[in-house]
Length: 179
Image (cartoon, rainbow, N blue to C red; front, top):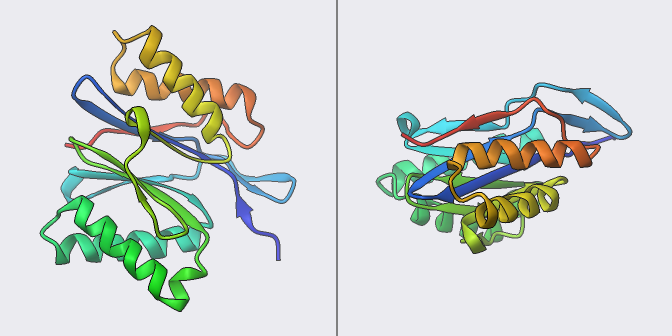
């Protein structure tokens, strides 16, 4: 069975604000299956923003589990992420899921990986998906050479550069900021 894959998700914390964005492309084998997939979601009345890469069904399963953990741990994002990662490593069903997530609130960004890791990214830039290296490289350059830009502007510009280079990334961006 052919898997739907490929995306770019990028989160940046800069000058006291966080923005998280993703392109809209889903690729199935060698063709574009959909060009306007919404890979960014707001949780907890917009206080937490998430982005996912990988199998869509798997990502939604993880998103549901993450929401459950947020409820169980009083909306403590880091604690919920760690507890989800623990379950991901222990649970035989969850271990088979093929997805990654970036989660963000106003203060921090985290990457929750398919191996059950929770990472606080270097340089306050979180990137996942097939175009992540392009987007991360562009974001690093923007933080260094265009610090006057907002986090949202940096996400948009870095995703644009990634979409110009990566065949699995398009220009249909959704960018959100936590409330």
